[in-house]
Length: 308
DNA sequence: AGGGCCCATCGCA
DNA sequence: TGCGATGGGCCCT
Image (cartoon, rainbow, N blue to C red; front, side, top):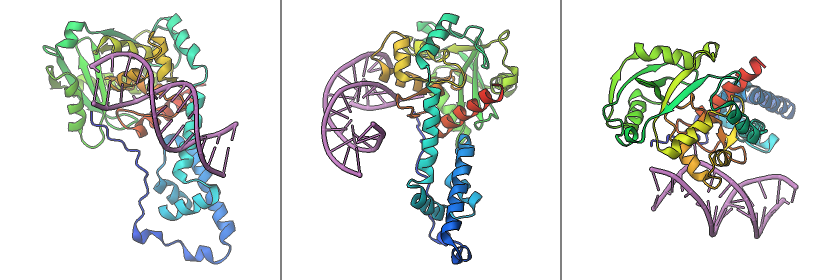
């Protein structure tokens, strides 16, 4: 798949952009610098959920990116980017609290059953093995692009329910190609009006109600479907590790294979593959970009806090 | 063959 | 202690 990893260190050090404000240095650099570093730390702590770029932070404290980078590192001992990641990791670890019992509880309720608070209710069905092997032959899929809190989303609908959800980064073509690759034999028909309602429901938490669950269709191997079903048991605002999922589906040593299956989840966001983390709490990977994973996690943290 | 992994170990501060 | 780096095992496509 096209893994566009947007996690490159984002240091745009242009030759001309490095000149610090000379006037500011003239009187009391240390006090001034301290104030700026403090300001930067507060800024990052405040809005790590949005994953501000180095430039955002620099602009906020009134410095060039490279100057802030150097200054911050000198004072805080690590780069702004590293500091942001530390905050992020700390938050992710908190999400993992009670992760084992979370999956157990979900199982007792019945996967995706009613009773999970603050989440999109989902009923799912898997395609038959024959349908899976056909790679979508004879399957009519409609698709449409719609705005979402995480960039433009591509929704793919099968007659029985939502079959695919992805995101647009550079161009729509790439996102659509990604979906076509999953079911090469299926016919794809653009029907924006047809998928608009689905998109609206998926991304507007106000519309999430147990009495009208979201219907999704899971198309994959046996193993993959079991993994995806297990993902539906992780409540919003919580997280599990790859090995937790492996244990949950009765393959305690298959954590790595679980990782691969999670990565192939066709209905991202609705099947919450973003709630699976490495054992250390690190985010480790996301088909639609790690930054987006972070953004979704942050968005959910905000939702949970909002109606706490 | 090679992954969105994990655990044990081993060096460094 | 607490990290980062490494090596070997593991299991599904």
